[in-house]
Image (cartoon, rainbow, N blue to C red; front, side):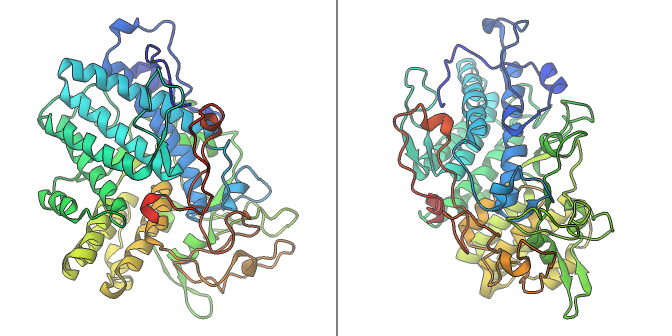
Length: 506
């Protein structure tokens, strides 16, 4: 449901949020409601509301969207004998599966951000207004990228219980205007209310975040609208973040205080579902003609843990090996996730890849190559490993196949960092593309033979028992509209189909 009475504030103080960051399921993470012991509404400040809004986004983006993006980008497959996410592994998404996240983002994140912006604007607090606008734009971008269309122009109006769904381009263009206006009102030295993302920093950090977000929105739109001049101006200004935008320092190794993905999948007592996918493992671990490992991308050990036998083995999308003995839970390697792992919103590597793509399309090959190298170096820095130079010697910028080399390199770079954005970029760039081999070529889902020799590194493959409405050699392009909206909103449009691209991928 997109509407929530604006008089009701989903409030957690900064202290309460810091002391209660846990979950028991994807849909229940941070079930934020007003504490009866909290201050009365007239005494609530923007600094009390902002941490709750941030954690609503972190809970959705860092868990449900992280997991689903990981399956759709073929970073993950399903663990032996379990089936929680087997549908994602087969490129399926039901209207009910995303409903909790949809509600979390609208009712809690966006409503709280509107409340913050209204209060800040009334007080002339333009630093806080900018922060709320940036997170609002980031959240609406997520919704467009998931569903294609979403309520925007009529959303968050307590008097309209059935807002229209706006097409994605309308939303993107509106967000760009909002960001530009918010930046124009603020001085870099302006203060910002209490927040987790940039604690004790001025509006300058939020301006840089806003610019990186504008670049992403514009580059996503670039295939359907001429945005060359706008992108050129942003690049010329060169006022982007020098470090990754991420929520860190707000997690600790105690119940209800851990990173959302860790709490969902890795905390004591939680069922283990995620294992590495052969696509990413067999791309980052290069073998010679006889099967010996000749090169391992150093980031592989940052993104995944070795299996019980000390090896990196990737499983197959679409199966959980029910009834086998060989491919048990000890055989597959698992994602390397810690209780204090950051939730990344936008990395330096992503920004550099976008700039490299811009130059590959409109500028010089040397500039494109320079920013491609900067993206790789930033990715290695994020992973905390060395070896970027060797990677670049093996996989240099290729001006003859620029989008392919950027797309595959970005896919590798985002593994373990931001799977949701990787799924988006695969849909937009069409890389990695599907190879000739399919999941059934690796494993027939009935015996213990397992042969991935036909897999081509840097490609995707059709999952075993792929969802029929997606089919062979295709990606899931969008989520069906969330049941929490479609069951209540009479203006929900007809679903165009699982393989209908969102506007920027057409």
